[in-house]
Image (cartoon, rainbow, N blue to C red; front, top):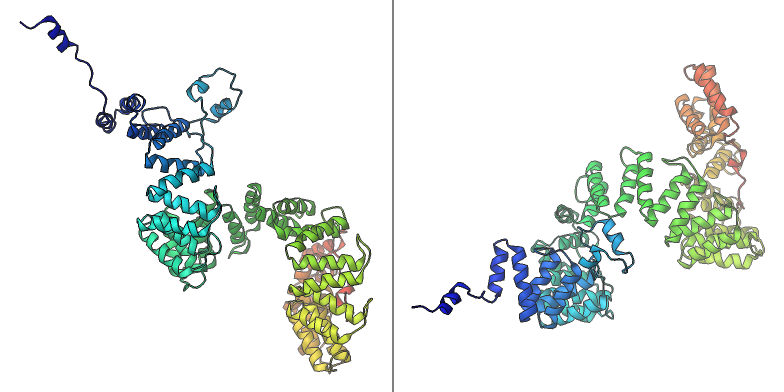
Length: 634
């Protein structure tokens, strides 16, 4: 007969000890809470390293347990301390970037967590260590080093990145290269990508573009979208490699389709410019908007350019997009928005608002804003006139090598504005600006030597500086040099060369040069009089915005020399352009044309509108200063 004790032993059989196999089986069958409980028993009661690792993974993902990054890091740390290489590697990854609070935590919950710990709350009991794991670059370096030395390829690549970037470690490209190579030897994409970026110069001095191309090709072949992006940019802009815009566009499209915001931006730019693929404003807008919506702020500025200068300019939309980027804190966008308010493009012209945005850009170290802000202080435009503040901003810009700022500092010194007048000091600033390519500084140096203003007068030196000014894009250089040739001052007297220089200056946009040509061909001082050439010179002056020239052309319509006058339609177009720009004299002349109906169809209503515009007190008045006197010119 079976004893009572034996029967009870069969009925009350003790549970078998939990095993990793049982825990994994529970997990695989979808019983995640049961699996977590088994892993916890194994970790806490049996010091099972694999169980500690799995608990860390479950807490990180919130599978079978309440998601808790701090608890996940605690279990990873325990497993790593017991020798788990995957746990070491994961800790290296976590501490490199940090882990923000889980997406399941609401803003209200986060606010509650930030209150005093003396408050008794359910959240504090559930998350005694908080919700987030802070970035800790030194800890990341320590754990990545341990995992890398143990052979973990991902940790080797991360450690290479830390050495290359100086993140938690002293920057050392040689050591970085060694660790990237170790990861690449294991055919790990991050190691190959790291080598490609290192040789491309992304980390600094290591420029070896052909080697970069080789490693990026390997990584891209594995389907890595970041490698596609980097390879595309290398094929577009890299040195020492053959540029291929068509293939670059294809690579960028692949990366963009995989969600790379930078690739979306550059692909949009290719469509906008028509590089490597057919130019398409709509495709450019699509990709640039996608990049912008994913936080790539520079895409907003490209959208601004697209709407500002595209086939169908829309300045209102351009300004609105620029405002979005500026509100997001982009310094370049803030500067451009200031320019919009200065010019009145897409927004109402507002110098004070322009100054506010340009100042914001300057505060973000957008160096081009320094000189502009200094100029606004100097002119009292949008800001109270303050020459000392202007000088301070010009000095900041000059320290960054800004040639305009150097020129402006010379002008303040020359004029004694906010500081004692000192021609010699001004000369030094002008020379520095000229060496950096400032045409304005070259012109001013020419004027100083031509006038002998506190310097020894030297027309030969003046001629050289005028020549340099013209070479640096300052049309007035050729204008002033022309009169030295007319008079034989510092150069050989040569009227033909003088006329040629005036033509060059007028072609480059000098209204004064166009007027000078008109006077020469009208009066014949240095060239034979030629009424047709005189008329052509007037047309050029009017095309450059001279209302006085446009009005004079209207008067010439009455003359009986058809070869020496423009057509009525041409005069009408020139007058309309000047009148639209606000010149009262042009508005009056245009009104007379429509009122008389002599050369254009009569239109009394339109004539009265132009007369009313001319009578408005806010209109700009045409001035005879458009035909300014020749050299010396300030």
